[in-house]
Image (cartoon, rainbow over all chains, first blue to last red):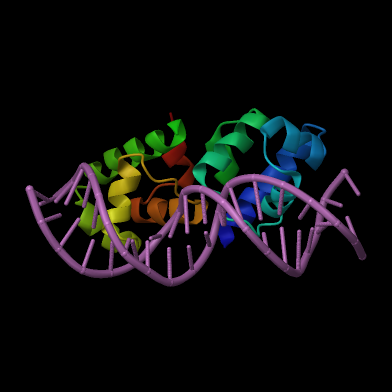
Length: 68
Length: 68
DNA sequence: TTGTGACTTTAAGTCCGTG
DNA sequence: CCACGGACTTAAAGTCACA
């Protein structure tokens, strides 16, 4: 519940830092746009394989997505 | 696929460092013992909420479980 | 450009057990 | 103490039309 929100905020922050829209990022990471939207809003509970895809798309270590 | 193995190895290493059996750790972290077994062997794809439970049980930040 | 509800398919996660 | 399997319930993965 709480960790999901953290992941979502980290993703959103890092994505915007990269200057990417959700749609652009979705394409880069190979995940559907609406799914990315759900992760950012903390309503999805992604698995580690999804976390890895997101991290690769952002160019950061996967662990960064779990930072406080 | 690869990230799962990493998580499993990290969990196993940290759990053994704590001197805990899978069963003891499963109880501490509130996860079923057979599931812990599967995560350690890399055949499970845990969600971030499970990752958090595991990290709390180990007393480490959740991101540590994703270390290389 | 993003949020949302609804949906089907796949896998997460639990519980019983065995060697 | 652990790997592993079968059967099961719940939730995630993945997609869509529309606001």
